[in-house]
Image (cartoon, rainbow, N blue to C red):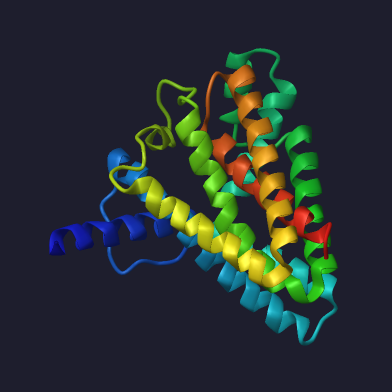
Length: 255
């Protein structure tokens, strides 16, 4: 039992190590299989990330107008995560926008440079998040917590539903699976995020946000299957960013 708990603790640390730039007390021991199992904790780590950003927003809102507080919270999120998901969104947009064939799209997505499609998409998504948070006002802090937790569930859904599009790559662990008890833990994190949204904005607004995230995830999954033949790490990052944005817009529709 102690060994099982210790292993789960290492998986949590692996999830934190992957999703953030926070220093860890020790190296949790990376292997593709263990990293795949660690994904079960992505929604819970997302909740913690959202909690940190909510604190930034709440403190900034004491001094600045909502739009400035929102901008500072989004900037803090980029810094905390190392722009991990934003980079994936930009690469995904460049690949799908500039790649006429599957092979060319995957090649473009591996290029570290950002192109026109990526720059425009990233700019619009960041602007939408800032505008939505500013519009949510007092609800924004709770929305950040729920959106960051629930949007990580989108990445798990796509990693489970789609094969890995490359023969090898940094995100090949996403095809490993969540391991024993993986989905109950992941869904518990997603349910906790949804409850936060319900408590923050109301049941109707939270359900609307959930539906918006599901629709965006289904659309992106269909696009990746058709254009790439499966999922990639960049695609999973894009799923998180688009899911988060859809959740905030869904909440804003009822704010």
